[in-house]
Amino acid sequence: MNKKNIILLGVLVVQIVIIALVYRPGKDVVSPGNDFFAGMSMDEVRQVRITDNEMKTISLTQAGDSWTVGKEGYPGDSQKIESILAKLVNLRSTRLVTRTKSSHNRLKIADGIFSRRVELHTADSSGHVLYFGASPNHKTIHVRLEGEDEVYLVKDISEWELQTDVDSWWQTKIVNIPDTDLTAVSLQNSSGSFSLQKDDAGTWRLEGDETELSSTAVQEFLDKAGHIRLTTYLGREAKEEYGLSEPEAELTLTTGDKTVRLQIGPLNEEENDHVVKADTLEFYVRTATYVLKPLLDWKQEDFIPAAPSPAEEGH
Image (cartoon, rainbow, N blue to C red; front, side):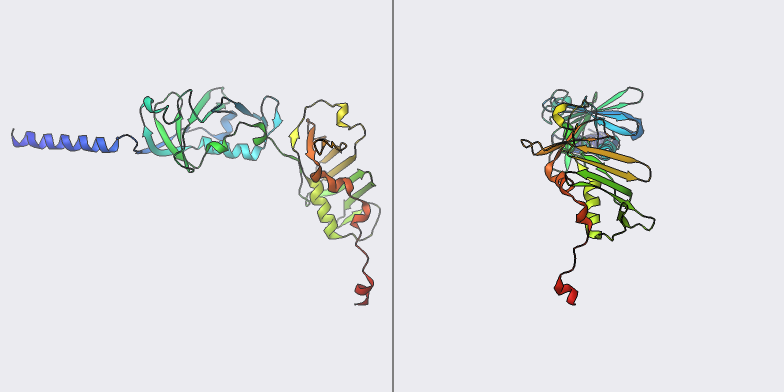
């Protein structure tokens, strides 16, 4: 064997060793980078469908400037949905795990064996499907694009962010109005009725009364009235059993550009909650008693500062 052939043979051996080291089983390969949805923007996505390993599926569908959840069309938590959508659209990896289809079952990322299957449907009705598989640790997870054999390792997203329960995605706030936006609040309950008005100086007064109010009491009331959470959605149809023909309380919240009216039904002792209907929401909902009790018990007198004690007057 001449010197030239020896050199060529040596180069070939070195190349074989490098290939064996780089592509040996179980080793991640550093790739130039893979953008799963290069060129796609969040605005193009009209629906996200998530399927878990038990084949339970949830749909998140864009409806104008908001999102709906499931076939029932419950109002979605747009901030949460758009947050996960941003992660999906911008998903990227530089860690290639395997190019072989035979590894898919082991990594739980096959067409029929997976942790999560996520579909992104765009305005032109085309679908893009990602499979999420096993997680080597709490920071990374295996991902594969449908129709391709390559499996990548990605970070900053987990299967726990891709739940298939409707209550993981629906909007939990019946009203969420900062006190700085409110200009008037009216309440009618078993103790009577009153209306708070904010004057031009930003001071809250009882309607028709110039009595100075407790700023602490006013702030507490505005916080309770302007932030009410639900526990579950009911249907769109009114039912006698909800008790809203004679509501236990009625609340009206006014801002500079809108008015929100809520009816609160009687206590359901078995569930320890109340049915609530807001005129800004097409669904009837249930809300826990502990959330509503301050409003159900609030009286006009609660805004009046307590008279100073004789000891305090002496000072």
